[in-house]
Length: 503
Image (cartoon, rainbow, N blue to C red):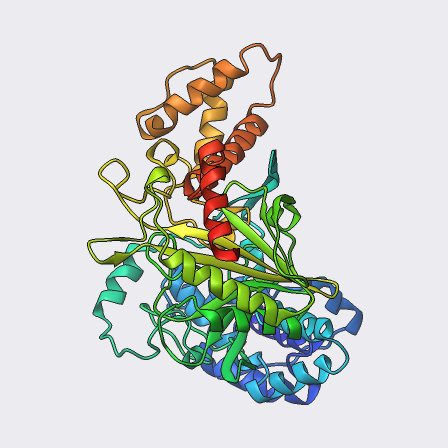
């Protein structure tokens, strides 16, 4: 056998033992499975000092990368991101504990505390390389101070563009409809192919929410700490309803260290996958969490309701009794579904199509439960064909895509193209150029405005300025998406709606 390959297989096995993915007694069993996948017929165990295990870090990515390089050189795979992912997932699937063992360990830890359970499960996701932490670490992240607090800005470069060779192979694969989508429970352990990612190292934790079967998993491309997904057992479309509020509040009862929320259930204002009911959560504090009440409304004892200072139109409900929150949230949802106010451009229906819905977020603050209800409307117009309450065309150079749950809470997920754009605009600025190259023309008006704004600055930190200004554009993006604008007419209309519900 290639000596380097033999060494890296030994390293991968040692890593798996050090992270409790396998036991020492599993060494040869796992080794034989790995060499079988790689098409080699011999293996030699290496002596090692147990103290050297610390050199591996938390992720097996570096070890896997060397094994994949061998696989490319040996002609086992082509050197594309998809083929490398398919093979490294198959290898880690050998080393990831069986679902029943993971479930047993999770609930054993849960008996000590929910936090111990999620710490175990999240650690497993990183060690098994299901959570591709080495890639997400490459994302560019910063915070921008705004009147709404410090917004999180991320340029997402962890998801590589598809290689044309992978696209061509994907077209040759006959669709089987199994699994039906990326969020179906049947993905656990799925072998994958060019048209569907491998999931041999995916593990799910079964949960019961409101008497129905749900599952907890983590996102392979985490946008924030412990970014989890809670998916329904049945492949049914997203739907915001009373049951949604019950599920979200029951989830934070079971996992008080996590928030959980749902994308809206309509196109434009919803998430990227509307075909499968699911939620997203995690252990992270967003700028929206820190938003304060801007106006409180009088309501029955035991529950607090108010408008929060946030660029989007959001109501916060708070109580020690989750059933009170469910009752009021459902009342607000039903009223908002039917609410029309021509004075601020809100129509509940046009041509028989419904436009109003809600993006809900649940969290705990000690003994108190909170529900943030963000009011959404997906109507379009000739002036705004992508959505009236959607990023407007003058900010599309930064963000054109839908504003989903994560962005609603104040975390921008921006396209990879901005990485190069920032670098090249910085170079142009420092060189004293007012015109940008043709492929950056979409940024030119914005770029010129910023240069003029900072014209008097001596030796400005150009890249920091561009990043901060991108953060301020994101704040504008959120304001565009707000149904009640932050002006006297908007506040008056917001108050009319709320008072009609709680009267």
